[in-house]
Image (cartoon, rainbow, N blue to C red; front, top):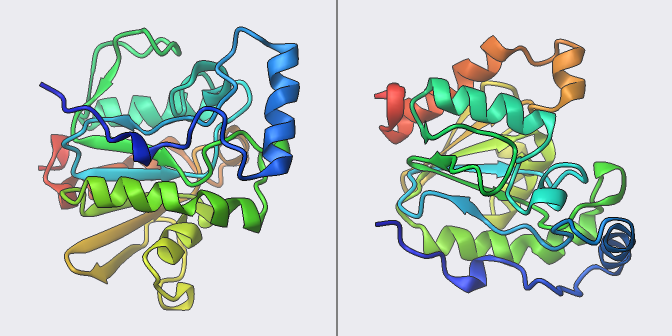
Length: 221
């Protein structure tokens, strides 16, 4: 049976740490009162060995549904690739109640609230860092990490107190971080990156399978 997540892994629903994000969230609440419109919680397998770190919720995706990557194009590619790696069950239908589940995988965003233009500020990233730290502390069995994009990569390293210059971001890069931790990098699975062919489904699949092999889960075994 899946264990519940500790509440301190997630920002409170009425989090007030970032005034700009609070104001933007309120605007979304006024326009779409039936949407989630709150800091998006961690989601996945409580016994996960692979921890995927995204940047922030998308307006039409996680901010609407309340589940990371659910409802936007980035989630379509991410979940289809995780399914190929045998890390999911059920059928993904872009809804938090679709019965879709992850095996061995945990997903959290570096910034838990939707930011304007999908661009959080440095201060907002720092404000949200304690929630990422709490997630990592609560799930020490997750020793393999996958950062989706440079900002997720950088904030993850800062969360561990590591020098960014020692672990340069690069798609497909693998970083030994010490204490058994390994970080993989990927370009973000956004529509822009796939439309411009900066990231192809084959490139993304290669990184996902490599991370799964490192973690010893799914078809990465």
